[in-house]
Image (cartoon, rainbow, N blue to C red):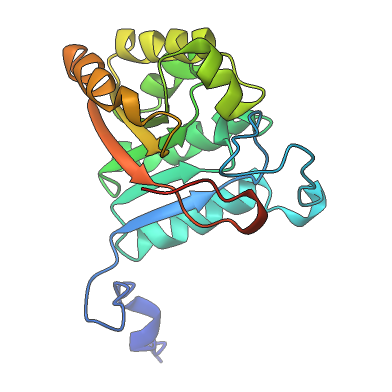
Length: 215
């Protein structure tokens, strides 16, 4: 006697549709809440992060992302915190790149502060990352230090150089801060476009006690 197979067992996974009827094809995944900067509009200098045991493992993140890809997500963005400070993070990129190879995923990308880009740019490119967003609010070293507290502008610029050398398209995300970097907006546009990069200015979000003046 032939075995009966339930139609549900053979049907293709259904796409994810939001309450407005839109197909969900883009997913942002935060792999850590930790960061090696302490930007004044984002974090206090003395931060308390989630215990590491409370985070999804890289294998769990891979399974989660793959499940969404199976439901029709075409673009994955890896974020943080600062995603490139996550231990063994390239393991996740290497694993997820299989979905690019199969054609199930159209784009794998990352948002970063750029501090680790010089180290990882070539490997990201090898994993199929073709564009990234780099958060950068100023081109002045002393101002950069004031905004990020712990950051080094030269390391970020070196990371951008490495990314472009690896063939990765860079988009700059700059937070517009009244009385802090508003005098650099024109300069930053000219700098970014002169290097073939896009640039977006972002309004600072209200963050309670660490809120900075907004435009």
